[in-house]
Image 1 (cartoon, protein in one colour):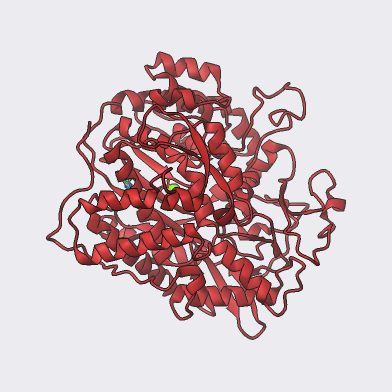
Image 2 (cartoon, rainbow, N blue to C red):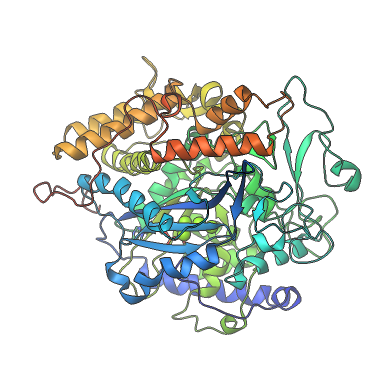
Length: 624
Ligand code: ADP
Ligand code: MG
Ligand code: MG
Ligand code: MG
Ligand code: MG
């Protein structure tokens, strides 16, 4: 998303009254865009990461850590260079949901040279240093997925009291001041999503039952008996989910067909990468039974009404809807994968018919008609009336509030940008080394998929099952996941359950493993020594995480907490434990504290700011 322009948000009542208007025009805009750009071809691989960060503040005297609500002060400074010279900056900075969050991307997307893998981490370091230079008073930037005590008393600096009876979030835990104040989008979303739902948000995360864990963990099940469960950590605000950080990667395909292929083939990889990136086991100061953020964020923006949830018969609403607007994808996009769409794809039949009349094929029309079952939850008065031939804001309005594991991104109007696909499941990793490793791994896999014509696609119901397994405590080491038995055959539709280790590193006589497939792809490529070294280090990290030789951040955090002298085996992460945990994590992130159980022994790459000139062989293939 580009720099957010200021605007005047409409009230929920006004927004709701315009829901059909946004849908109708959004669909026309997609049809126009599609008919102009469907045949666009010859784009090359370009790609870029997005990393979200939390501004943490350490109070060493009192041994406390809080989130610092200073994104609004820091962001304009981070954006100064871009405003002066948008084409020649090394980084781009954007706001995120939390008033303590910032999002950084490279200044320009990377290209299709293998050597580009060697500048990713250097760019991430540059971003971290650039943002860190603007901090003060014990503040640091951390790419942790969730601040462990987010929503606990006084978790912000400055401290604010939550207001459960007024404001936008109506939260017992998350004060409105913790929502990014610099643009109306965020508070508007919080308020409208809650109002659409017709109730307080209800996120229940099963608590981790340690030997001394008390059930019920607190009294919220008494205060809110319809919403809070006694054996769960109850959260009640969009910010307690959307205030988590993630790692995303977007890549450009040569044409729409390739984009659809990559969207489909990467969807089954989402749960595997979610398990492998798991980094968020603690919520509101409690150790939970989940390892990653996905379902938490999903419930934090679940704006379905009681009718849509199936709790009451349909009367005012149109559909019974099975998933939150933040969830895993519901259908594949390529015509040849239609048979794997085995769950009900709830869609608006009128929208579907209109898309078909507009020349859009069945799977793409179903996809868009599915996105368009959602109402707009944020509308600005300046944007109500648009030119459907040239604007795409209404389409983007619905598209950008469908937060799914994969996103199919059409080219923006009148731009040099092509059809893109975004990979969205990963929890953010602590270090630049890890974040670089994860994104390079995914981008390399896209090349392997295209080069060897691999098929990862499996019935969507199995991908959904894998998504749930991926989030369980210790999933990376102990869960099994549905996987295609033969990824080289286009039609042998048999599946087996394998561990992350077997999927990533291979299983003798059964599956070659994703890393060996990448190695075999790389063996045919010419590359400079530094890039080769870095890529090998990145693959080694993934390989070791998958095999259990080193821990996920989630497991590492569990171990740290368990060994902490103040931990009473009661699932409670106190202020002091939180402080020590984050201090140690910050030391690891800065390279001053070794963490062999998290990162292994060799975790230094040869990352560099520039790409060597001599090696210019492109990774992308010619367009089919
Ligand atoms: P959003 O928040 O909508 O996903 P961002 O602009 O924050 O979008 O991030 C998009 C990512 O896509 C960035 O890493 C950026 O470098 C990358 N990117 C930009 N242009 C292209 C392109 N033509 N092809 C692929 N990726 C691109
Ligand atoms: Mg972004
Ligand atoms: Mg973001
Ligand atoms: Mg976001
Ligand atoms: Mg993104």
